[in-house]
Amino acid sequence: MIPILIGCSVNSISSEGRPCALGSKDTCGSGTYCDPISERCRRALDGAISNDDFDVRHDGGSDVGQDIPSSLQDALSDIALDGVVPDAGVDAPRDLGQDVLIDMPIPDVFIPIDQPIADQPSSDSPPPILLQLAPIADTHVKAEFPTSNYGNENNLRLRATDYYIFLKFQVSGLSGPAKEAKLRLFVIDISPQGGSVFSVSNNYGNWQTPWTELGIYWNNAPAVTGSPIGSFSPPKLNTWVEADITSAIQGNGTYSFAIATGSIDSVIYNSKEAPTNRPVLVIK
Image (spheres, rainbow, N blue to C red):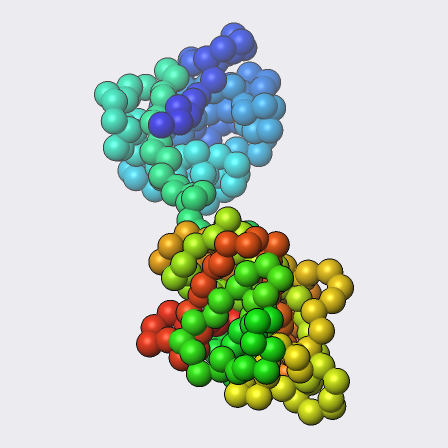
């Protein structure tokens, strides 16, 4: 509630509060005016009102003349002519010469501060998945049998010096480089190392012919050289491992990868011929 003070009893001049004759501009002294409600002299509000500019007709009824200054009309609009303040919440004095405190309610204003903004994802949110691609070819090659093909097997074996894994993916639907690309494999036999991923040629090692799942073997496989583009974490049985290969996916096209390891203990993953949990390239 806000208290509003009506009337001026502080620092009043000597004529304030005495009876006055309405219609007579000389009844009250300088700096006061004749109040049409209480018929007593009142001090002008901040000197803005005087008898000279307050010419009120009052015949004892309920009509107040239209010559009341606008600065006073607002103050008088909610006050009954008999001096009673309606709905004040207190017993208002009938003599307006006394100070009147009016409690006016302030409407509650609710300002929400914690409402989330709709459809505005956090800048920390991961990008949505755009593509989940199965390999168009996957297999392993074995040094001990350099001309044997293992493309029909349901697993991919990896071991230092004598087993490599090869996978090939056909990527389409991108408008530019991938924001994120991960190669995911499902572990069916563990090793201390999951292996490292290398980008390799889409063609056989010494030919200009694209390699295929049923045509590749140790002797004609693409060369595995350079630095790895990603690595798998140490595998746990019956779980997925993934390697970040975002740098390799620069747009639509065909991509071939080899996986190599330094561990002499084999790690084995499901191949695309497995009934479930097959290799997948996830692009965001």
